Amino acid sequence: MTIELKKIAGIAAVLGALTAAPAMAQDMTEWDGDGDGALNEEEFQTGWDSAYGENETAFSTWDEDDDGALSEDEYNAGVFSSYDDDDSGVIEEPEYGDVGDDMGDGGFWDV
Picture 1: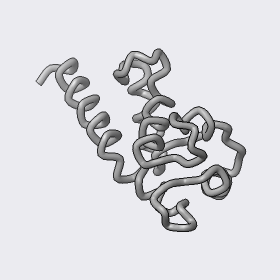
Picture 2: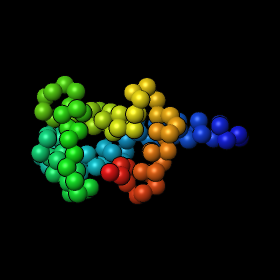
Picture 3: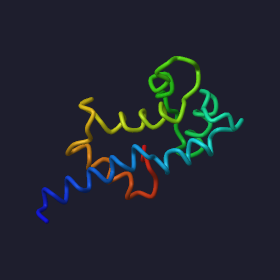
């Protein structure tokens, strides 16, 4: 397999993982204090601060329907969009390198 095909296969695997988002969904579930399957802004901020130790302002951007809660789909889309710097809908080089760097650090997202 050529290096280019390996890159494509790797990108497909990462995108599949981001779409399925087991690690992200697990973190979301851990942050869901009331167990309603969604994160309100307080739950998001508390979870983010305890996991990463700094303030994150993404909640309002990720809450696409402005209902004051992040569904699992909104949460996963927010994580994906954080890597898709050019908003192309595809994680390409060097964006792919950012995903790999973060996955290699033992967490899904290194801030």
